[in-house]
Image (cartoon, rainbow, N blue to C red):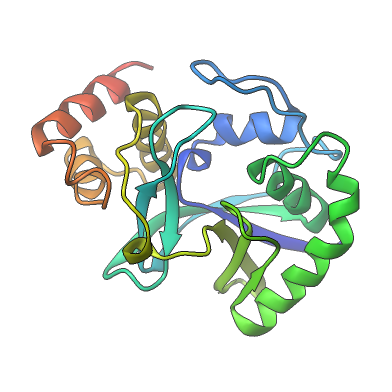
Length: 217
């Protein structure tokens, strides 16, 4: 069984949030019901990772409203992320749900996604389509297993930034605490500096949100 690391840098850093993509259903505070993966088993492992580059917020989330997180390897610094060890089939199904493909299409995506996975591993990048999260990036490997993530075709400099919804930003904060074990101050500083947040949220507002979210078990 071929496995890859699915690298999450947004709300899916929170394992319970990713669980809705795998098992299906609608997460609390969300506006979307997920069909789930054909293989509903949880990831074999997860590890905290840091990717070269950064994340930014743009577009309009149909699940949360507000901007969505995207990864740009050309931004300065490092992006905090979490890698989950999954099968290629599970990665395909997660990708299909991120792309808002119609129900029943994930199986048809297997062949094209498999080819894109191979291309991304070989070349560092591959495109499944023009939309959001339809560009695959392979930022390297961990333990000899390729790491793969999805992002938008444009980088941060090519789009209009948009602030994320508080619920979405709070979910990312939970994921950072859960995966990296960072204290409130570091999480708040990290999120407050992201494009789309920095120009819309004050550092104090981000710190307040993070403190409130992480104080709620």
